[in-house]
Image (cartoon, rainbow, N blue to C red; front, side, top):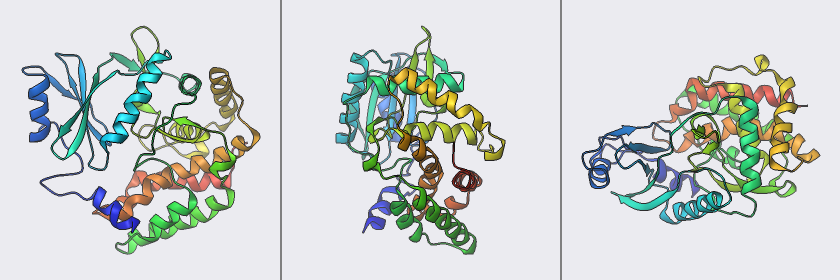
Length: 319
């Protein structure tokens, strides 16, 4: 059953936790092998351990157990294609083993944060323009889920009374999501980054947009990438944003910036799909709580903040 497979992927124990820190013996051994005597700085990250090896100017990324070598190899090929087409991404250098996991080495590119909402949507358009025809296999874990998938996950949630109350609330949101959903087969599909927000988008020293962390890359409706970018603008960096406080009148300007940079117009159906696809983001992040060892993940403040935005969006579709 799908639930059993996902529980196995997300399971954690003291000897092999889901996230390895820089001090884990397997990670420390790789650091010692590839950067002996060099300073190693942990860069943070949600789905992988990311370490800047200062001496050689590289980044070591150690992935979770469910990430396969074949998936990473395909993503490396995609990144090399983007480099050849003039986009700035860290050059992939090698695939490695880190205990029972796959790791990778890539170049470190000095950068600062990419400032400005319009600049973010322009960078997304540039990525889509450069990535036409590129394909990668779907990741196991991503900020994407159809209403049917989200419902199946949420029906598998088990926990105390408060956890189940939140699960029932989420299922109610999914019912409305299903009513407004536009199936992927009806939308233009494309290579998408899947998480082009915050620290995954920078500005290099020579002023170019820098694209980082392709862990969620896939071939999906291209509106999914815009929905991710928009949702995280609303929720804000501290998960404290409220949908009624967001300046929704700016959305046409952001979409125009994307269209100008990508060289393609969004279709009328894509405009309609932006609302449900944005509302699906926090639900896709929360729903896999059914397969975590501690299902209270579903009740975390940031999970509920995101679902509140999803509920508001579905009641106030983006014009």
